[in-house]
Length: 467
Image (cartoon, rainbow, N blue to C red; front, side, top):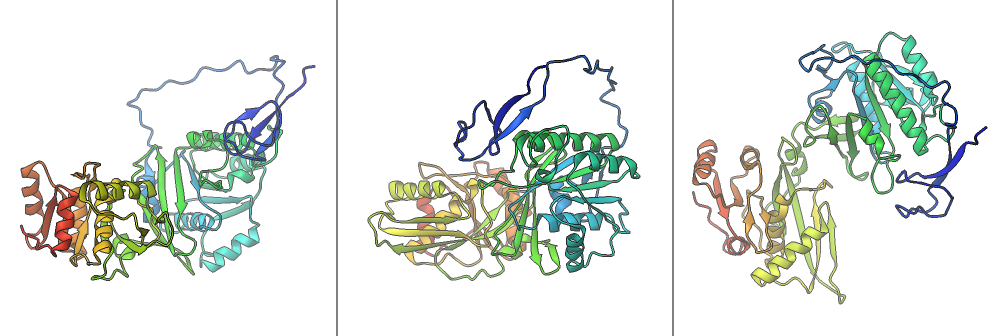
């Protein structure tokens, strides 16, 4: 009889080694190797001979791929319009950020009398009493969600097969489940992969939407093998600052929609509340007439948002000035400082610089370059930017201002919120300029900037915006 082979698998990156060591050879993580036993493949007498699979035409549509609402508009937006029968979603986030609260609210809204969907919530981390306590706190005890507590994949599969077909099934969390087919501890790479594979398969066979909750590592990625994210149809990250009330739901993979959408929530005493107008939320405390602040129009999703960027410059007390950044890429800040010094002769080498994106939201697009540069110049000159001004544009290494996408939607959002001035990149096409001026009210003013030199001049002279 052939002996089972033993390997050691890293719980961070999923790589395997034949011998145990204190550090993973691939990712360098310490104490992350766990022993796993591979099944004996010495005998193929009982192997499955296979079966003929059915081939269908691309034109065939059985209607099962139609999207249906979850009852929460912000969640529907991130998912691409709603949930899809037979699909699988993976939601990751830090501990205590509100993943279980979001999950319970989704199921309760979906099972309401308005939508009347059959929803099942299976928790491997909390008891039924604990879920009841959360439901009571969120005023959700009148919903028709069915609850269960289990960590055994086989028991979950048997239960779902015996029930009348559900519409949505949520598992909290995938790292707590254990399959009897795999000889390793719950949460190991093999268990996470195997349990997810079995649940995704039964979801496709029965036609219900499967929502999995995943833990994250200290680096912010979902724990377990990377293949887990490839197996599911949609991967969502739920994040935010624990000290602030807002939460952001962001799609990083979506087979049924765009990954450029985000959903904004606020954490209240009664659970998560949707933010219908994020721009007003993030600039609610913005005060004009203060140096070192600028308003940037973000467009990471189809819905533009206004964000406040703050910069504080102080004389350094050390040989090397400090650069502290919250909500933006510190390498991008260093690049802009180098451009301002090399192209515009504005030196920041003797100053500590602190940059903050108000509200804790992280900006990922390069269109914020011009707004950051404006805040830096404003703080350096101790001169506020003209009130009612929004700024966006990308800065090149030669000091030129480059065009960005979604100019029109950014401008409309700003002007709808009462901002009358805009500093944007110079447009190459004159017809595009005329289109902006014809579609946006003539009383609003747009200034086109081709270089960082012009930005500095406008801030120094309290620019008078002209048509």
